[in-house]
Length: 360
Image (tube, rainbow, N blue to C red; front, side, top):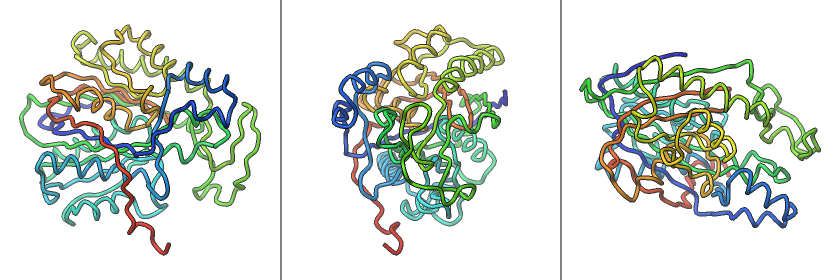
């Protein structure tokens, strides 16, 4: 486990955004038979998702979350010195989408701007990277943006389409230099399992694969431009490696789940969540779930669950555990104190950055 403890940086705001296009999973009865749809909803717990439409991308959702957060907090974009965008589905092969977001938000050139290509562990990883950089930079505020548009890379003939939703989020970090503001992390990654969750084509390794759907061994039709996942291996990883990391982390930091007010974890599916909570011996009431309403929203699933839980109400400061795991494979856990007054409600948007449609 890669451990770190960062003092003098706090989470100062969280915002999330969804596309306006809500999809009720019962609508898929016209694509798959009704019994298959019923069983999929029952097993995954996903009743509905939100899908971007037209040219709307994950970064459009992240932009709205960021704009909402900055305006609500009364922060001028010139105060942001670090901008990180975390997403597995970027607007372009190059440049980094963070530069597009810098333009849209009006963040000045005397700033650090870059992308991180991660999925479901991205919120915890991004928090660690952003806080580390902020602590040692001549700026007081950093903006960590997250986006996901998994619905775009799931085959229309794959029942996994019922599981994944699109979303965006923004996380504001502030340097306080107050040593009582502490962010603690435990991170792991395993590249030997890189192909447990992956999209084979579209990069430079396989640039010209066929887009034609083909039947695969698991009985689902996909092309190489669609997401491929070894469900059995990912499940085993989620309920063995992930709880082991949490136990190592708590042992190293002399803490238990009894010391934590809430556990906000990635929302892969109901079956994994229930098994993971059982392994951690964590009561369900301490671990809010949004898998039923939003589906699996990758790196955004942690912040959107926080916004769903506290965006419409405030309960003061909470000590929270954040747990992300997925593509890479990568997994991470963090402890943080969060003021629920700084967590905003989830917003809906149909925004699309039209200037990004270069030469269209």
